[in-house]
Length: 314
Image 1 (cartoon, rainbow, N blue to C red):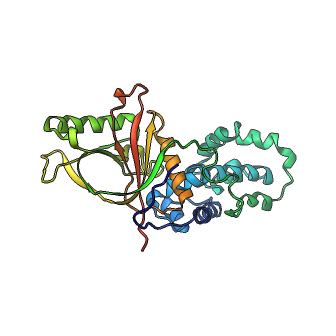
Image 2 (cartoon, rainbow, N blue to C red):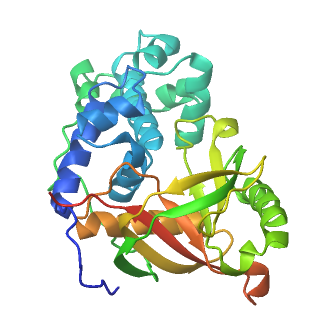
Image 3 (cartoon, rainbow, N blue to C red):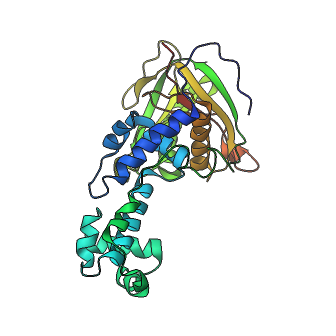
């Protein structure tokens, strides 16, 4: 993927530095499986901002923070089922960080394909294992060995990636709250277009989508999406349309054509590229800039820029 020569200075670390910091987060989770850790605590342990941490973690590890934590808890519990036959399943579930035996049993069946009691009975050949061995799953992750493949290995990234100095946009916007997906976005942009179209803003305005929340942390019904269009200078929209500014500055900009069900993969690939590049994002929100109406595309594809803000070098 081509990268334009930078005409500005942005903060860079190395892909290995990203790995080292993510390993700190992995170790922090591994050593605190019995606790209900917040995403902020985990990000702080690795010296990451919480704003983009969940995406960086997924790019490096290949699992979400929640998925990684759940897997380690289940593996620890499975070992304790074998190492401690006298312990009842509820005791093990609570000790491994599950809120109840019911939640544990459901997650265990999904992961292992059987119930905890059946697993213990079928695997009783390992019943003499020492309890200390069960704790060995709280491994210390090392950046040289924790990742089987290089970051980005096997990914099919077809995007054009540039580093750009983006302008500040003053936009009119409609905000909706609900689970991220096509339905909530269509509602927001439909209302925005109904307002902007008769006023002539669709001809010259830049269409932007801002997604403020992390669905791993924020309840789905509370997630916020802003459908935005840039405004001519001096324009003041009337209620209920409001305005905001989307900050300018250095961004990683990934220009891509995305099928309707490909947005999540496109975002994951973009952050994987960011980690490989060594550029460091800051706390401004990411956004999507849209260039077309997918209903006009023969394949129903979106033409989109995924824009990730970067820290400037000091």
